Length: 114
Length: 115
Picture 1 (cartoon, rainbow over the protein chains, first blue to last red):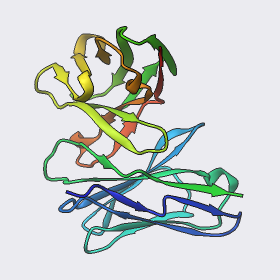
Picture 2 (cartoon, chains in turn red, orange; picture 1 turned 135 degrees about the vertical axis):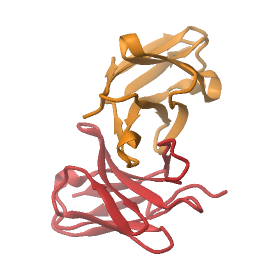
Picture 3 (cartoon, each protein chain N blue to C red; picture 1 turned 180 degrees about the vertical axis):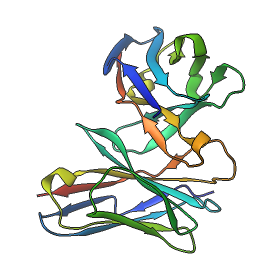
Picture 4 (tube, one colour; picture 1 turned 60 degrees about the vertical axis):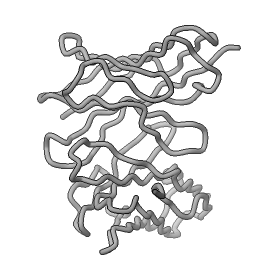
């Protein structure tokens, strides 16, 4: 069974640009969550999608957005990039029906903003 | 709000020695607790989880953790450290009781193994 796949793995952008990150969950998983990881703030929850609906959102500005498609694949977008957006962005999926709270993480997309 | 606190951002142990990584939780309801490990340039991998069954939970790679309600703790242990255990470890609590899949993570503990 393939794991969670995130693309791209690495990318470099400049301030003011926008970026789109993609996540393909484990087959059969309908919940996809996104986390931002930085040395200063640690792991912070961005948002969670289930069946194409955002169920939960963290405390991030509106520049951070996401969506989920009918096949459960998800994308997140960051507009008007700032230097502080440099981070590892992790996607996680779960079955949401197994009721264990266990998340399966991808390897992340490392974003560098110059 | 639920939260976890990891005591010690860096822990160093000698190869073959006991590993003890500390985690305390705060929750208004019986929590679901997890330990994840992160190797360099990789995502997070689940080590073990507590979901209100047995209080002593065994995970992968020889790790285990004990849920102690009286101490609000969920410390991670391994009897004998191996060089391959060098990584960052995160304790997390789930909001599953509130109907969603959000995890709240601790700040992490970087484990160094001394040869």
